[in-house]
Amino acid sequence: MIRFLVAAALLIGAADGAAAQTVLRVGDQKGNSQAVMEAAGVLKDVPYKIEWREFPAAAPLLEALGAGALDTGLVGDAPFTFAAAANVPVKAIAAIRQTQEGLAILAPKESPIRSFDDLKGKKIATGRGSIGHQLVLAALEAKGLKPGDVQLVFLAPSDAKIAYSQGSVDAWSTWEPYVSQEEVLFGSRRVITAEGLTPGLSFQVARPDAIASKRGELQDFLQRLSRARAWSLNNVSVYADTWGKLMGIPPAVPLNWLSRAKIRITAVDDAVVSGEQQTIDLYFRNGLINRSLKAEDVVDRSFAPAIDGALASQ
Image (tube, rainbow, N blue to C red; front, side, top):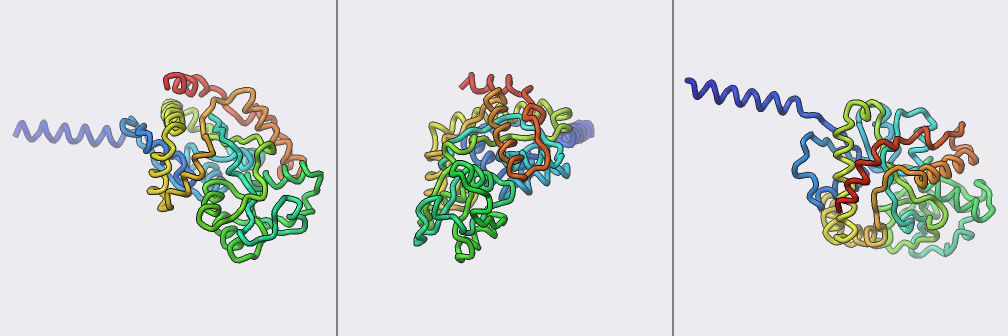
C-alpha cells in the first residue's frame, strides 16, 4: 500500500511538472527554423515545450502573432515593416542575414522575358507587403521607373504559383524555397535577384508580452537557433536532407537554396537598424505604409548578449 501511495505521489508530481511546463508558440515558414534546429540536434534537451506552427508566408504568421496565437516567429523585413506600421504588437529580437540570390523575380522556362526591362507593362504576381513586393519596388526605383510601369497582381504563394504556372501572370516575384522549387523542378529563370537592391534582412520577432513573460525561453530559443544556423553553414547537405523530408520536397530543391543562401543569425545592431530603416523608407515613399517609423522603435536589442554568446561558443 505504501509503495502504491509513493508511486501515485510520484506520478502526480510528474503530471504537475508537465502541466507547469512553459509553452513557447513558434511560427515557422516552410520548416525553416524547425528543420535546421532538428538537423543540428539542438532540440533534444529543451526545458520547455516548443509548439511549432507552419505558415506559407509571413503575412498570415504576423496575423497570428497579432491575434495572440503565437509568441515568436520568423518573417522578412518587408512584411514585418508592413505589420509594425499597422500597429501589430511585434518587435524584432534577432536578425537573419543571407545572400539575396534566392529573392528573385522568376520567368517561365519558355518565356521571352530576359531582363527586368522586359517586364514593363507585364503582370507580376507577389504578396502585398511581402519581400517579393519589396524587390519589385526596389528594382523599379533602381531603373528610374514608376510602380505603374508594371502590373502587380497580389496573391498568396499558393495562388501565385497557380497563376504563374497557368500563364495568367508573366512573372512571379518570390522567395525561397519557392525560387529553388521553380528553378530545379520546372526550369524557371531568375530575371533579377535582390542582390544590391534590398538589405537582405529577415527577423525573429516576438510579441512584447512574450518578451516580458517568456524572456528566458526566448533567449534560450535564440541561442539554440544561433548555434543551429552556425552549424548549418558547414553541413548544408544534412540540413537540406532534413528539410526535404520535413516538407516532402525532393532534396535537390533545398540543396540548391541552402548552398547559396549562407543563412546566419546576428544580433540587432546598428547595421540591422539601418537596414530596417531603409525598408521603412522604401515602403513609405511608395505609399505601402501610411506613416513613417523609426526602426529603433520596432526592434529590441536586449537579446544581443545571448546571441553573441551563443555564436562565440561555436
